[in-house]
Length: 151
Image 1 (tube, one colour):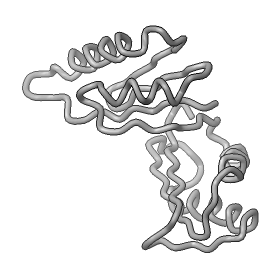
Image 2 (cartoon, rainbow, N blue to C red; image 1 turned 90 degrees about the vertical axis):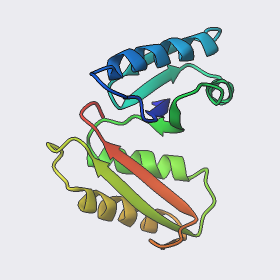
Image 3 (cartoon, helix red, strand yellow; image 1 turned 180 degrees about the vertical axis):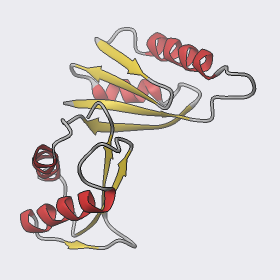
Image 4 (cartoon, rainbow, N blue to C red; image 1 turned 135 degrees about the horizontal axis):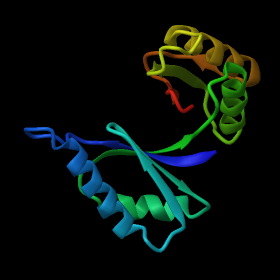
């Protein structure tokens, strides 16, 4: 599933007010994209916006919202290495690149593979599926994977 992933900037000052700032940020985002059919979920570090369509238009609107660290188009996949491999290959079919690297962050420590093992497995399937090479220092394309509890 394709979605918009929002990473927050620094939202705390003093006294546990992070939740208050995140709720305000959510309200500001809803005001900006109210004409689009979206579902928003959030936690203390990320916000996820699921939209039926118009992702590019929604992202353009989000660029005007103060407090966002980054806006990323992401793909949600179940925590299964084979499904992750398939999704990466499907996504990269539309990309043009000669060099790449894989960077994995594993927030879900119950996932059976460590970050380096995920990098190896995904890197291997990319090498076998495309005419490319690994370049960890200056890649044309970086495949970022986050293994989280929800996928």
